Length: 83
Image 1 (spheres, rainbow, N blue to C red):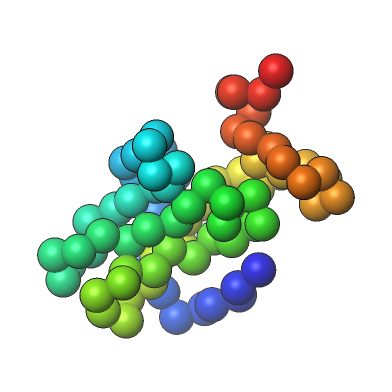
Image 2: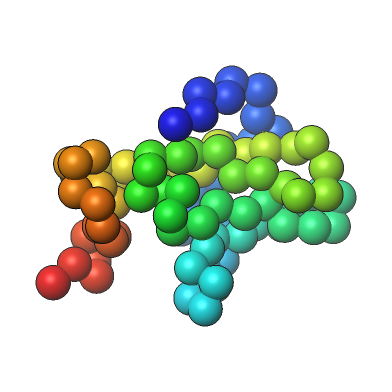
């Protein structure tokens, strides 16, 4: 898990766009591209979304425990979609 402290902004996960086909969350970057945080990264506890076109990063605010309460569990999903 990255502990980056220099971030452009902090964004709630609810304010990001979810792309189901790509299994990722995106948010508009000032450079014109998108900040990206994938579901796989979230399952690993990542909170930093990076823009592939510039050096900016944002911290994504979400409940890490709701995504993967036990790091020993290989696959987990948001609490709302767990069966």
